[in-house]
Image 1: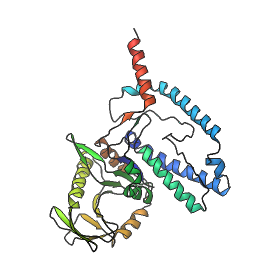
Image 2: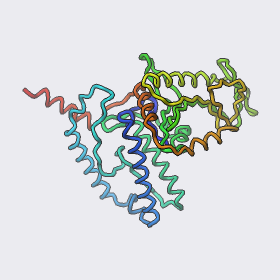
Image 3: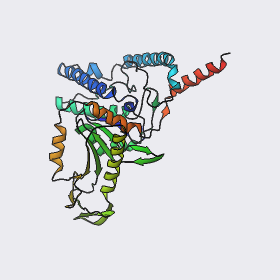
Image 4: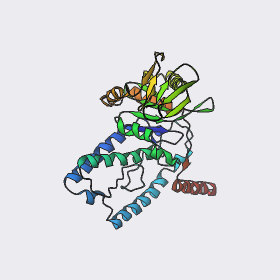
Length: 335
């Protein structure tokens, strides 16, 4: 399952420390799956994640809240951070609770009929976990548009690619104080893919050209003009190239136009543009999925370079904001 390191302008756990969270995520995912699998095979899934023990769960939640309040006092200096490059204080390990974004919190309302069904249920819940890490930190959170939870393309990238792939989904870059939203940037251990979708109805055909608009054709619908996807792919490639050059990142950049359910007729496509449609997508997809290389240092450096120029909009969590106000009041009261 690929890792969502940035989504639009939402605050991300990864932008706080890109060198820590990718490996932490992979470790947590593996440990939790092994624990879950063992419980399933031993017939103890209900005891592990059942909803019947309400009193025990409430006790855990109460303990977590008490520990969280205590820990906030220990890191009060954190609020005076002014440099974006400063990382957060080491996050505490809290008991497993439903709303804790630091760990996996799983719920299985029914017993899966097979190990494959269990795994699919697990992956679906990991998607929720990734959305938390992609929109919150220990102190802050962003308000995510509900449409992202149903976004099929986002789910495709997160659930169908390896853990070693890092995804920036529709990130907003701040370049010369001007926000620029792009499509999808996929950082693999060996290269960076700038991907623009051009999809419509099943078996739709797109007639490509160097003009501002392409023509979409379908046997059940009249022809329609669509904005040339080269514009978006090239703009994205230029942004990535400039930032990689600025931070001396040595990672190959590739640009692609993707139509998983249709066809792209573009015989004069630029040499540096990969065209992926129903005829070529599956081969590319399988090749990407079989990438066995671990996360590389240059890949993380590339991610950090991009995240440094991404726009972030967030607000402090209520419990931290209240503690912050109390801290300021105490400071002003001091003689």
